[in-house]
Image (cartoon, rainbow, N blue to C red; front, side):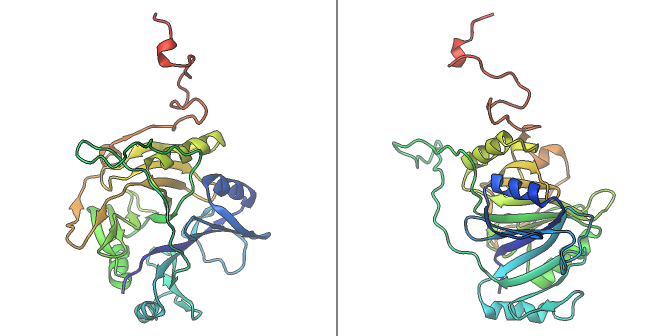
Length: 321
């Protein structure tokens, strides 16, 4: 009786044209559009909806638009949906249309649960040769001209009351704490077995509500880089990356999104089981990122932004000073 991940997210925004271009450059497929709504899909059918802020029926945001308005979590059967219906019934903002149930979490974010619309996909990912494992034989590692995200992997929200919101997701939705910044942050996964986190709740020193970022899973490190270089060539602004998170082990690249806050390409996060014991960390730059490139990499020169571009066919062509 576990939630399996994110099935759909909805942003509220006013500049739909800019959001349309951004998410198409990001690698999502535009499935439908009208004057007030854009509907995109990732590779496995996970949906990203961008709705105009004035659209009737749009759940209220926890901060002014553009921002995340709704997260739809998924289960694998009507029986599991009924299980969560009983858990959520009577909570603030409870809704039930027979196919999708939901409520408002203690931070004010609309959450919904439905039987998944996602589909199984087969993708080839890079094999890595280490000193002990030589998995790639007589083959070059892939290079990507752009990314095609597999799904929305996790959401990160700023919260007013970390303890209350964490407890809600544990007790009502069955989430499990993976790691913690005591009193400051909770990394939560949907079930005992799964990726490092599906939801990260963060309470800043001066507590506030809002979106920090939405993260999209891609195949491998090469796709993080290829996707990031493509976004750079398209003129979108890097917030940070590429880089690596030591807590989850994931490789990342963050971009500023016209739909609100940031979006992230990420891959190679830790896979956990019920035997995992949560760790406590003290917030700090080296805990957030083992290494990272500020400002990103220019998609044309393939060097750090504002760095001198190479001038020769090979680096060795450069004359000695």
